[in-house]
Length: 243
Picture 1 (cartoon, helix red, strand yellow):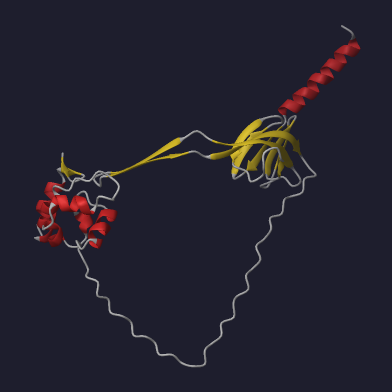
Picture 2 (tube, one colour; picture 1 turned 90 degrees about the vertical axis):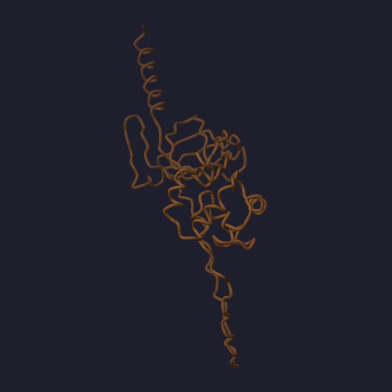
């Protein structure tokens, strides 16, 4: 093989190896990514439009052909330029919540808004840090003091009746207790006198599957102060239903 050709081939391979080995760790939309030239990355939705170019100046580390530069925390003058290829949504994530013995179940789906970008270049210097516009301080309004004295209104006496903690009844949560209080049932005695069918009608708009059959009997024990007997019975219940 010709020595000149061999030397050119070696130079070519060493240059490509250096380009391939160059990467950066950069912060994009609150997340840190390890990126290289021509790499495609999915990040949190960016405000810029599709097809536009963006530069990220929070570069934490650059490795270029074995030479590593570390920022404190970011490298001054370094930057990563990328092109926004498109905006999209990520895969659906199911979020399921359940509260034991409360009859509470909730299932939601979520799809994260994302942007697909392609890294075009990594610069080790010459990039100016982006300046965020600082909000102007609002001038405090002048308050004019009235010359005439006004009589202070006497505080109104609270006429609200303090009820019992209905959440001590197995199967009743904060939302149901609030709904019952709005309907005029705020004590154990009042709940004990209410038919299960009537209770189910009152809480019909509260999300969840609620079985009210044992609630009046539980309330009767609570109203009579039979807490030990009530506790022993509740240990056998799950969401107001006997196991």
